[in-house]
Amino acid sequence: MLFDILTIFPGFFSSPLQDGLLSKAIQKDLIQVRPINLRDFTHDRHNTVDDRPYGGGEGMVMKPEPIYEALETLRTEPPAPYVVLLSPRGRLFHQEMAHEWAGLERLLIVCGRYEGIDERVARFVDTEVSIGDYVLFGGEAAALVILEAVARLIPGVLGCETSSQRDSFSDGLLESPCYTRPPDFLGQRVPEVLLSGDHARIARWRREQSLLVTLQRRPDLLKSIELSETDREFLEMLGWSCDT
Ligand code: ADE
Image (tube, rainbow, N blue to C red; front, top):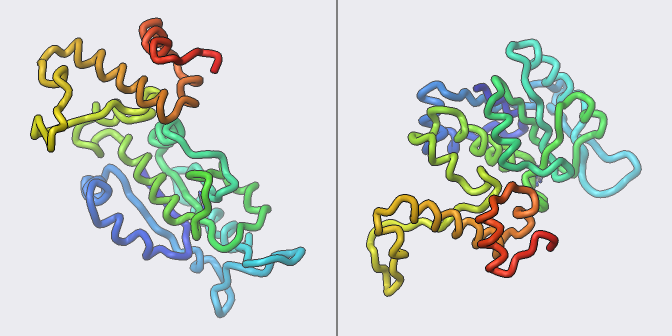
């Protein structure tokens, strides 16, 4: 899968692309990542990508022309990209989007900077996305988040495919706690069930722990997932009610 990242800071991506599983995925040719300098699509002496806001106000706004020209140029290369504009005003990015996008051949991520992007750019992108309800300096860190979330779902990128199936959110719940050696750490013992070798009991315990931690930390998630009768009984025992 090809990831194009349109940015005024292509150097931002150097280190993340050279380390860890992203670099391995690139070496194995499972993904290609191209940071593309937006300033290459300007025509003035100063390579200007921003201007003052109409109507007054603080900060600068990203001009539409360089982004438009970059998108038009990049779209001439096949395969056609799915174009994502990053901004805190976008729809909230989530795991389901990551799964959908992992099936694409090409994702083109446009990083915003300054106080905002000229609204007329919106017509030339497929979607506008935010990674959370907070404001970053720009879209670069958000682009990395999306790159990682999507890349790890591409077959072959993680050594073990089942590990992404066990992730938090993959079934709509947070992940159950995990442990490794030693069995006793400063008086905290690994739950006995995990040492039992009884796979059915372990699976049941993990499911219950997932339900418990989700109820404690993200009860909102319980509203949007399918719960079995056993799940409901367990949650009701913990004081949960489906109409809360
Ligand atoms: N740019 C600035 N803040 C952002 C956010 N929360 N998500 C995506 N892009 C951004």
